[in-house]
Length: 130
Image (tube, rainbow, N blue to C red; front, side, top):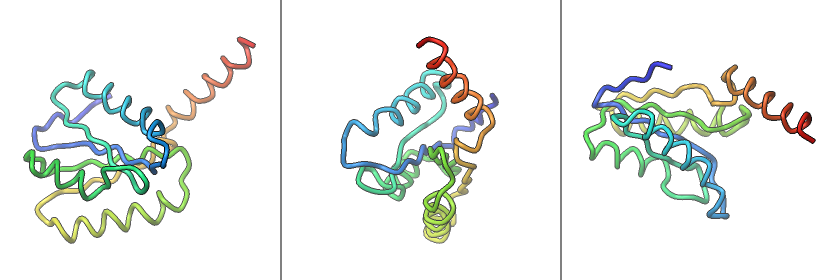
């Protein structure tokens, strides 16, 4: 995997959120693994609702750290309304509010063929190890 280690780039892992504080732990774990694997990469999490921080707060935090290119990675398995409508609207609002920042919205992780393959492998192991 190639990763842009441009010092002006920050990655935002964007997830739905939940009232349950334990819900966010897998998203935080992904961010931590990214930081360990790519120490020069600034990675933060943001949430749509019910969990903090929200997207605009995370954007402002990264901007304060000198990041001018923000790659937003939707951590959704399915491409529902949040990925199709809500997130693009939030990003459009951010582009308008912060024209000095380059925003890059990438496809949801669930759309990536590697994710589908990994989930199939995990599911098959569950069946074969039973």
